[in-house]
Each structure stands twice: as structure tokens, then as C-alpha cells.
Image (cartoon, rainbow, N blue to C red; front, side):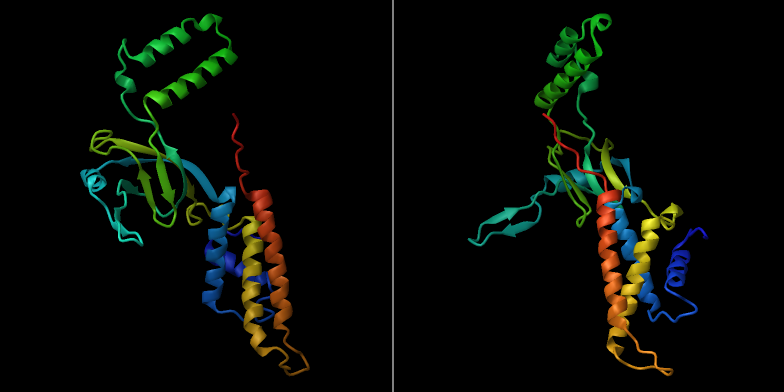
Length: 266
């Protein structure tokens, strides 16, 4: 079996599986393109092989700081009260589908001898030679919680539809122009750069059934029409078979190729 390494190669492969060129597959070229695009998009949303975890560096600009300090867009409630939406956000690429958060930043590098966090570490980690790994791990967890209380985490909000990462902080005092925000995120892989996505078994199976569904949907209009030689078109059968296979593949994607949700412990 040939290896699929391009979008055109995937289209040709799926059409061959449906019988082309021996059988005329009655679908438009635009429908085949839609089937491929939809398959790749679904695989990127739910398949762990379609995304990668990465860290994006974003350099803060003066324009972003000024915008964050403005009132933002007006929102009027039913009783006529005027509200203003927060505008402390940065734009992220379209390929970002999820954000875990941002790396902490603050004055830790300038921590002095009299800083309470320095004193806590000094007392808890006084002797590495007599400290077991378990104790060390527990202490580090406690110090992380203390940092959260004393320094504070910067809350973030993100929705893929907006392509905006909102960071709820004091943009005037907490960050400066030229400073970098490091974003912990998940990014959809571009199949043109990583062509093995086109050759993934699930992608090839799902795309084939998507094209088959379009084929059956197109033929439903001609249900019962008899062709020369006594052949009768059966669009509903082709359509129903494709829908049933797509349901199985959707379940397979969620059961086998989706990352499981992490349990919260503690």
C-alpha cells in the first residue's frame, strides 16, 4: 500500500477505496476538499497525534499595556447598566487550540536575604544530605503553595473562537514593555509540515467515509432511477453505510486517540 504524504494523495487514496476510476464516484471536487479539511480539523481537536504541547514566547508591547488599561468594549445589561469588558489580552495564533496557563514571573530573582520566602527555604532545606526524596518532594510542594499565596498566580482565560489569551493582572505594574510571557499551550500540527498525519489510519478511514457520505447524499436525489442494463441507484444505502461507519470512527477517536482527562488529586 502506498504511503500518503499530501492532501492530493489522501484524496486520490480515498477515491480509490470507493472504487474510482472503475466506478464513477459522484462527488464534486469541493466536496472532497471539504471532507479532507473536516477530517484533519477533527483529528486536531481530539487526536493526540494531531497536536503537540509547546511553549510560545510573546514579547509584550506598549500597545497591549495601553489597551489593557482602557475601559474596553461597552456591554449594556437589560436594566440599562453599562459595563466594560476587560481588554488585557494578547493575540495568539489560530493553530493554538488550548492553553494550560503562563509561566510565573515576578521578583524571585531579586529575592533578598530578608525576604520571607528566602527564610522559609532556608529553614526547610537546611541539609540536603539528611533529607529523603519523599520529604524533599513534600517540602517543594509546600513551597510552591506558599509562593502561590505570597506572589500569586496570574489568572488566564482563553477561548479558541476569539484567539485571545486574557491575563488578569495589573498590566501597568506587573509587566513591562519588552518582557516575555511564556505560554504553555497545545498547538494543532500543520499536515503540510508533518505529512505523516495524512497517512494516519484513522484519518484515511474517516476521510473515505466522509466522501462516501457525500456520494450517497448526492445520489438520494436519483433514488429508484434505473440505468441502462437494469442497474438501480441506491443512494440511501450508500449514505446509511457511511453514517454508521462514521459513528464507529468517532467513538474510536474519543476512546483510543484522545488524551484522557487528568484527575485532580488532593
